[in-house]
Image 1 (cartoon, one colour):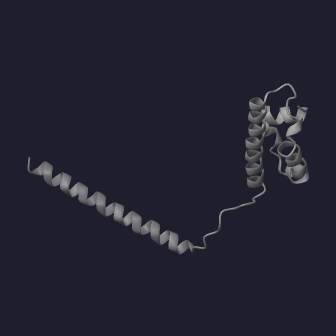
Image 2: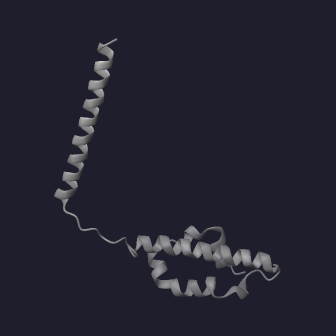
Length: 114
């Protein structure tokens, strides 16, 4: 196992760097995902599969985080007007006020009859 594979297993956060990612993405993918022959030589099949799986999971996590920092794969934009959002908040606020007023009225009525 090479040093960069060990680093990838132990501290994948060290590879979260948008500039480094855009420059070396394809090389890292080739080394870490497509070259399983360079895993531990004294490891059995189960151990080797575990290491390859961990490398892949870490790679996908680092890719997701770097892509987020590069603003890739953004959720689709919902075009809404500010006035629509304000109206929705206002309607919800009025409904909440009415609900609280009704609960206060029922509470004061029940305490007066006691």
